[in-house]
Amino acid sequence: MTVKLNRAGVSHARSLIESGAVVRDDWSEAAASAADENAFIEEHGFGEYAKWFLGVDSEKSEETKGRYSFPYGDFAKVRRGGVISAEGRAAQNDHDDIAKAAKRLLHLIDGD
Image (cartoon, rainbow, N blue to C red; front, side, top):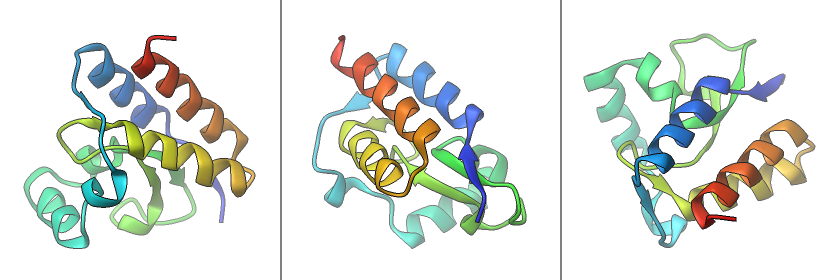
């Protein structure tokens, strides 16, 4: 697996944060379900779906959910808990560029 930083996802997250589209809540309750993901893809397509993830595996097909990893939001807003979760999982799995990007997003959310 070759997961790399999804620059489009980072840019989308930054834009949402700067516009105030952030929620501070429990990520375990806010994370999108498989049904939520499928409904979003059905309505918006994979191009828009991809923007909600900090990681992308270019070895997997663009038309699969498995291509994208490290979600940070609920398809409407950035979830602070999602950014924290992405940072932690990325760091644990040696995806340093993704962990650093998530940390920068967290600082932006917190106004550091």
